Length: 427
Image (tube, rainbow, N blue to C red; front, side, top):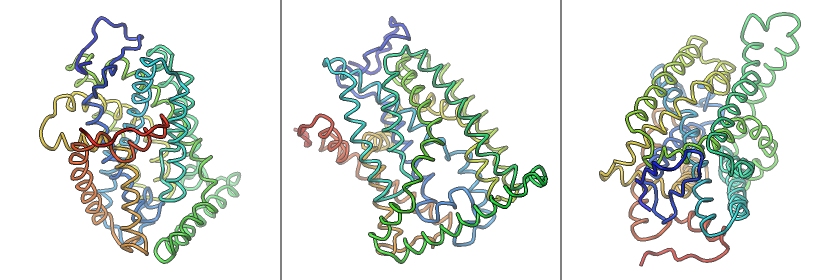
């Protein structure tokens, strides 16, 4: 089927079989390529510095100068949370696209469940063996939950997704904002909150002390020490992260399904309107996020203000940016045909390999038994590492896919899902 077919005669609540002929939707690959590169831009700080430095500049083990504080602001406004949100939106769209193909062959949700079960194993392996900033575990778990909603009308998926996201803004947002209010405002100076304020100060101290323990393990220990540390000290992170990110992940998956079915990625919607409301979402959401970033700067980039900004105050304005990016990039991606666009799309087709492969590459760059650069590079130098890694993604993905049908891990995941060996090399 031609992915540019608008299917204008289909009702928006109907499951439009956009991928039945096996053709790829070009905009999905392009957006996925942008997202997987953008996720590295967000994660590079936590790859090369203590995890706390992702949000809190004072956790850097090298000086973080004023220019780099403005880089923090730029990254917070443009990248942080947006690329993860975009990737999650696309994952939801991909779940529905996969089910369209499964339904056309007479198969059902069991096949998708098996596929997500393997993804869960990939995610847990990534978390414990490579890097604990993993998102695949969330995708697998909430992807399984989303199967209960896969047959809902597209409008229902959209409404429930938006309401679920709003619930997360309120519940998780208030939960993650309260430490700042108690620890760093006059409100928390009331006698009734004295004990809680002391507890939060102790929590901050323990967290930063733990970062130094982890620094020594990564910079001086063996790979076995690193894995043992993840298993013993961080297995408890998963339930908390599932709670915190669940109110983002599942709603965005449902929204992604709905937008795919409405035709956002295949050209079924009015292009002019997509560009207008997409651009408006980006501008308005980014403007509000900038105000949050400037507030953090005025607060001195304190520990609890940065946490509040990332985990609470930026959540609501992030949604229009994510949806706006999806709309604008869907239009751009469907028409982009230059050499760079082709390489970005190829990186998107091999996004699974690029995502996990980047984490493996960072092990060799930063760990003491590899390049030994953990904690040694400032924000500026880490962005150079990011740019070099982007070049690697763009350099290998297209030549590989010119010769092979799938990326290496995409092929493995497919074989495990169907439990049979697929040909890899193109004829």
